[in-house]
Image (tube, rainbow, N blue to C red; front, side):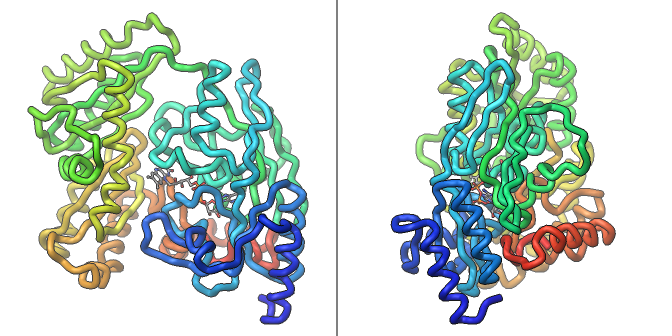
Length: 475
Ligand SMILES: Cc1cc2nc3c(=O)[nH]c(=O)nc-3n(C[C@H](O)[C@H](O)[C@H](O)COP(=O)(O)OP(=O)(O)OC[C@H]3O[C@@H](n4cnc5c(N)ncnc54)[C@H](O)[C@@H]3O)c2cc1C
């Protein structure tokens, strides 16, 4: 990378491209762009630039190549693996896409929408709804996460069970590649078999292969009948049985199936204002929050769901359940699930593992993983929650009450090794939906299939020979 003199020239050139009002260089102003959402890591940015146009992004990338300056693309900075923030060298420049924030087109007949990288997810959802369509991606950070970040992390969320993750929702991508060329891939085509799929390399690329400037997204018919249920049950085994039962009994209308342990519900009720237990009389060890939906207003889904749940009680799969009577009640149930990561952050010390194994093996994984951690650290608090319908659990490990952060984090490697070794034993993935970033780079290198690692590194070197795109992330 550049020596100091050239580096300073490079920074001045980057500032000139975006002009006054388009950059920040004071430590206090840059700090929020360099801080991890969980607050556990502070990077150091050399500069923050906020391009207003694709042309400016092109010039920034060309300039970074000339001066060999590392660029870190950033959207809403809600990522959870230290991927969208600079390292601590003070030599990397954050490229915030927040000013590239137009919805360029919405086509109801084509079931597609074109959004720039800086558009916030809720704005896309609203734009789709305005033309009576659904953009189904939905997650706890949707009020802050931006389309470029969501694409670059291949975000999942609560509706993957029916609609797939971002990879399945992106039809086309426009991006500035590491050599400064624009990839004009904003197609609405559903089928395009013309060679390697560059779009899919950028989806989940975590900003290491280019800067996404806009995407074409897939829309769906809007659900008109939605049933949200909060179900009390004994254990994850029962939850897996309930999922299969509800899918069959409702004509596969289940679009979300989230599981939370009692400790997770209690943590949220304790820390998040305006939350209440939907089933205060049945404090079961586990709960499932499930959503079923139909595009027909007269689908009779509520009666179908009630009958299916009654059968689930008879079969011992569930203890009790409550169906939301209104949209507001449904939203109150979802608030408990969606603010759980925030409640965890407020609780203080914890280690978070976003893992997947097959749906059927998840109960055994949770049981074995919890037992192994309890043996390692008596009193440890495991909060295994999330997208059970996709075989994806956020396996959070919180220290025993009273343990100091220094003591707990001193054993972080041991704890995470225990979680990941078991994931591999179960044939799972060390990153289900959050990505690799700086946080899991070592684990990826240590555990990935050698042929896959070779190919990932070859692709990175071929597309970004100067290593300017998000250096130090993924590979
Ligand atoms: C409360 C909470 C709940 C969450 N729930 C979920 C969930 O259910 N499912 C899930 O998958 N994730 C979840 N996340 C994680 C996070 O919201 C997602 O990873 C999201 O996709 C990040 O979007 P962002 O705009 O904040 O990206 P950032 O954090 O800014 O960046 C993420 C990555 O994308 C890259 N990037 C950003 N913009 C661009 C661009 N224009 N071009 C190229 N690269 C770019 C960055 O360099 C970085 O590698 C959650 C986070 C929080 C805080």
